Amino acid sequence: MKNDKIIVKCCICRREQTGKGWQYSFRINESNRVYAHGFCSVCYDAAAVRAKLYQVASVVPVLR
Image (cartoon, rainbow, N blue to C red):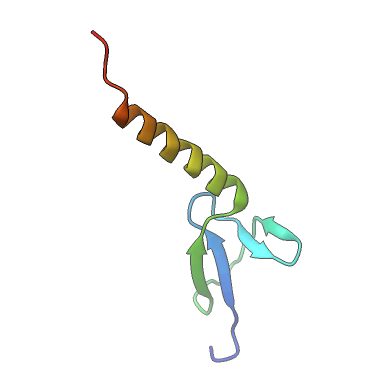
């Protein structure tokens, strides 16, 4: 395990960061893998939009 590299995986869609961008990977044996989790660019953008909408919704009063 000392020669394994750290694989960055999106915490939302589970794609892995490679030299060719973010791609889905189907590994059979993951027991020897070391993962770091983050956001791919697509999931990050979607999460940023949701966070901004939540922020705006918490400031705007509800009209009844």
